[in-house]
Image (cartoon, rainbow over all chains, first blue to last red):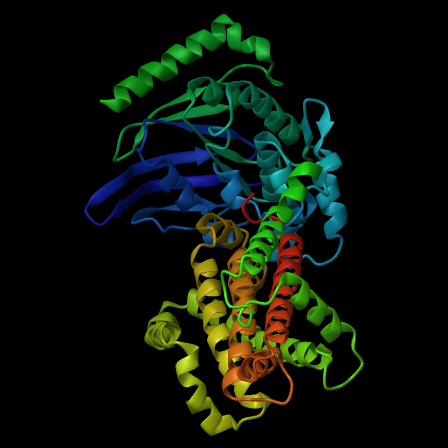
Amino acid sequence: MSEIAIEKLSKSFGALKVLDNLNLKVKSGEFITFFGPNGCGKTTLLNILSGMETPTKGSILINGKAPAHSKIGFVFQDYNQSLFPWRTVSGNVEFALEAQNMDSNREAIAENVLKKIHFEEINLLAFRDKFPYELSGGMKQLTAIARALAFDPEVFLLDEPFSALDYTTTLKMEDALLDILDKTEKKETTLFVSHDLDEAIYLADRVVVLSKRPAGIAKIITVDLPRPRKMEMRLGRKFFALRNSVLKAFEAGRK
Amino acid sequence: MQRKKLLILVSPIAILVLWQIASLLNIINPLFLPTPYEVALKLVELLASTDPAITIWPDISATLYRTLVSFAIAAIIGIPMGLVMGYSDKIYYSLEFFVDFFRSLPATAMFPLFMLFFGIGDESKIAVTAFACALIIVVNTMYGVHHASKLRIMAAKIMKASKTKLFTKVIFPDALPGTFAGMRIAVSLALIIIIVTEMFIGTNFGLGRRIIDAQLVYRIPEMYAAIIVAGILGFMVNTLFVWIEKRTVHWAGK
């Protein structure tokens, strides 16, 4: 169970200030989406969360530890560049376990994760022996998701994971992702960067709207839609109202 | 598909037809250009004869042996060196001049030098060939490492892969298509250099020696037959290598 505490977080690259005094507490098992203008520093925030970059000021603590000492599941936007093309679907998932020196039961753990992942009724396990280049974009990204979840991360980070996919596939992927998270024994604490307004609302418990660079938090909007989320909810009044308030905060933060 | 595959026969048939026409019309002195039939007859004789003075098999096996040993040595030296140079900027800058200089220097210019150190036996032929081929494998492997996906390396780091695992399980396989591209060039080059060394340095057996000896004493059909054998050998080695490459780095370009 993990809790994330972001405190007075600032990041600069030389004279360029990217993040400015971010404060956020994420409860264990919560699903947060970050939504903000292009180039506002969302990716930098994820890079600090994943331990790839260090903050200039302030801190991020995951269960009281620095990200570099925490188990992070990370899904990149570009699945072609982030999967290992010389490994099968199952081999890609097992890599996460090999990296952690988990030498026994790798196959069984990978199988267990793949079994939970469905794309329109098709189980990813059916593709375990396929290589990434034999799969569709959606299937590749699901493989990357399986790899990130396989070693039981403390935080699950996704950086615009569906933005390279077409609209129909994206809708299916969003449902597939929520479905996977429903099926994992422990509820993953998930931070998801999105540049799609509907997606940011549909997936989240809370939408964190970021302002333009240097990014601060413009507004945090709680999504009080019931779970499991259903396609029809996108058409409802409530969704519309949420959309309005996120967009209003986004517009205010963009100026 | 079947029809397309037959198109491979177009160029060899065209060459044979043109050759036959040139012979019939006496355009070229028949001493320098015998008829395809004469050459074919000689080729069959060289391949079928059991007479040790005629058979070409010892030459084929000597050339093939030298080529493959040179290539193996080049790969054993070149792959690790290329990986290290690709991985470490410091080592790259330290060795860059050495690699670029000797890569630009024709291997043939170094025959006398290698003969001085390795004598006139197989050692000098193999050494000079391995040297030239290793440089090509080094450079291509190094480019392979440089082109390894930064995102894959980052993904592995986030998963907390150790440095060793990062190298053996991510960077090495990601560089493998480059390594194979280098080895494919190197295996063809090895055959070329070996045949030249056989002509220049001299040997008892070898296709290069066979070709130059036939030419010196004007056994011209035999010269053509030996050239054709060398061509077939090169083609087969290259085809076999491409076959292995496609199966090993099956993901390349996909």
